[in-house]
Amino acid sequence: MIKILGLVMAVGGAIALILGVLGVFGSIAMGAATWPCIILGVIFFFAGISMLKRQKDTDEIEAES
Image (tube, rainbow, N blue to C red; front, side):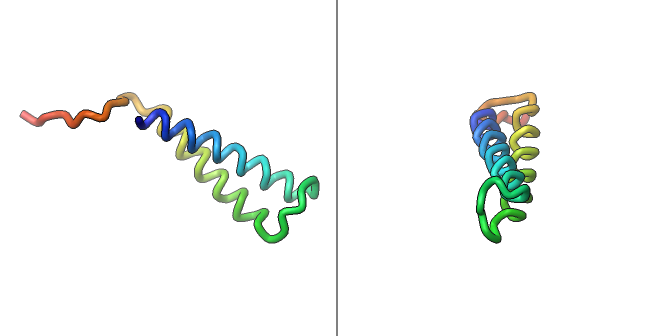
């Protein structure tokens, strides 16, 4: 479950980052949403990558003994 969420966040962050960079250089008219798109894209991309690096991927809660 964590890997799926990490993949969605990484892909979404990459898309937002690409759109934001294209907006800064004038290829796409985004108005005032250019810099927030870049900032959120960076945050979501790195959060998704760090979730993909996570070692365990289980939904089960381990019992403490």
